[in-house]
Amino acid sequence: MLRALWRISFAVLLCYWNNSSAQSANARLDSLTLDLAVQLALQHHPSLRAAAASTEAASATLRQARSNYFPALNLSASTARTEGAFVFNPSFPPRDQKYTNYSTSFVLQQTLYDFGKTRGRVSATANLHDATAFDYQATRNNVIANVQLAYLNYLQAEQVVLVNEVTVAQTERHRVQAEAFHSVGKRPQFDVTKSEVDVANAKVNLIRSRNQAQLAKVQLENAMGVHPSANYSVSSDFAIAPFAANLDSAQALAQNARPDLRSAWARFHANQALVSAAWRQHLPTLSLSGNYIWSAFDFPLYSRWNAGVTLSLPLFQGFAVEAQVQQARAGVDLTRANIEVLNESVRLEVEQSYLEMKEAEERITATAKLVELSQQNLKLAEARYNSGVGSAIEITDAQLTLSSARITHIEAQYDYNRALVRLRRATGMIETQK
Image 1 (cartoon, rainbow, N blue to C red):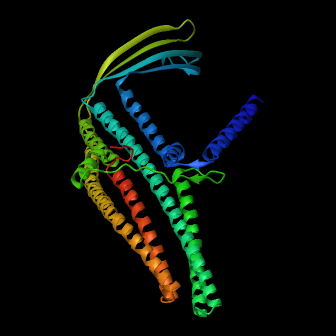
Image 2: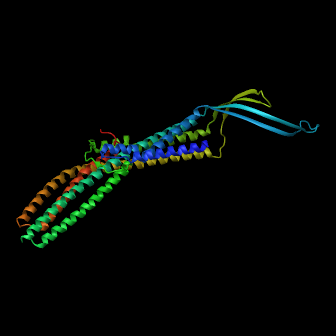
Image 3: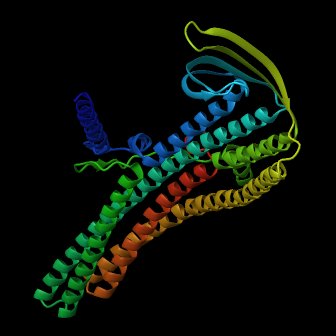
């Protein structure tokens, strides 16, 4: 009965915890800022929980390795009942005997010196623990960067929606104007039809951009690991810290700060320690053992003790030690090669992000001028059309050019900020404002 009640209580608590977790991950949200989006991701994204669990497991493994420095103390108690015929002297017939043996003992074992075997294993485990800590930081950096990128993508999509809404309004205004001119005989039916086609095309682009904005919002929620239960607004204000260092400084910074590189080096040092620990299996081990025993056929029990020092030297293990050394050395070669591959990848990522940032910076200035010229071109086309000199095609071309210029300018601005995010992640500086 008590066991059944305990199971029911545990199930209720588990359901309550699951519901609380679900509610926290789907909390009501009225307005979202970039800082809040990052904060929510750090609280709820499952990849961070997985990385934290790996770090905790590595900590437990390290404690296990260090336990070999301490003595082991065991307590055992036993009782045995023996019945049967026993021959004490061949000259006499067997005698039936019945007795019970009681025994209790403490056993103490302590490794005094193993010529560095334990030290090597602890060193390797400590380096692997450091590697998992760096892996957690790399996961954290990726979560932050992914949220920032998704946030920027959504803001860009919203800006494109606004541009397309303006374009729809412009084409609608031109359609009304074309119909008015046609009604008084100033413009042919072609202008009216052409303006209606322009309105339809603009609406199609608006529908497409709204869908892209909705998809970008879903991707933002996915990056945060949070799916709010109600609609919310997204603030258009954001701040991505600029990156003032040159390319060479950025490369040097990445070599020192990238957590994935530091993790790879920690694994390399762990394998080096394993090589040393494996080779030391050839060396002897000096250990201390002691027993304190109470035993007798009946109570009270009688005590005795023994203690001793043992020196054990492995003479032949079927080449197992040599194979362990070979395996550890192969691990060193593997991790070293992985570091070189990762170094090349990091260098490429840093340089690509840096060049993208500089290119987008130049495009911002160029596209701003393009928007200005496109606005002037549309005004001229409208003036020509109103005076009866220009055609409907000129209006359409000017509207398309201006819409494209505005979108291109928006892309340049957000490309610059996305490049900043990628560059800060590539250099391992995603969380710093320096």
